[in-house]
Image 1 (cartoon, rainbow, N blue to C red):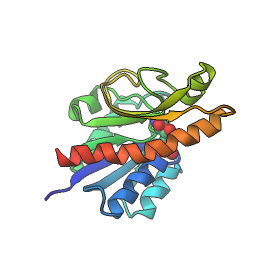
Image 2 (cartoon, protein in one colour):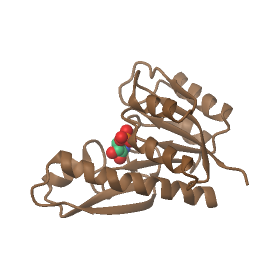
Image 3 (cartoon, helix red, strand yellow):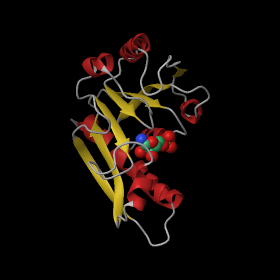
Length: 192
Ligand code: GRF
């Protein structure tokens, strides 16, 4: 059977990307990573891609801080389509996607977010959860729409907030949950 073709987008370390590629390598996820794209030069996620022999590219984002320049976003669409990507997986990608990507991949772009959405969208959500005195936090995988972390939720995993947690310890616990949840959700798309 044909494997689900993934395009993975990130801006940072790439630990979620690594977890996904590891599951593929282990034969536990019936997918194929066709392309990894980063909007930051020297992002760790590009090295992760190289470790697993996945084609990878740095895409200079242009002059905006929170989104891609429109011509760059169109180039991103072209790169993903050229690689015959079926599912776009955001793994720590720090920019809001706009019409070119949303129109090219309807209900085919997913993101992982380190909170139990709709609580705490936006950046450093584990800090927001800690400061709000939450006893339980976690992560969410959701479809990407035009808003910030606002698309339909596909799956969530809870983790406890422990007495004495720091932002770092809570984030680390959430990331362990992310690394399990994201490949599981992608597997659902692969089986569909
Ligand atoms: C993760 O915590 C994810 O939830 C958020 O960005 C972080 C990416 O981490 N969207 P990594 O680059 O996968 O290590």
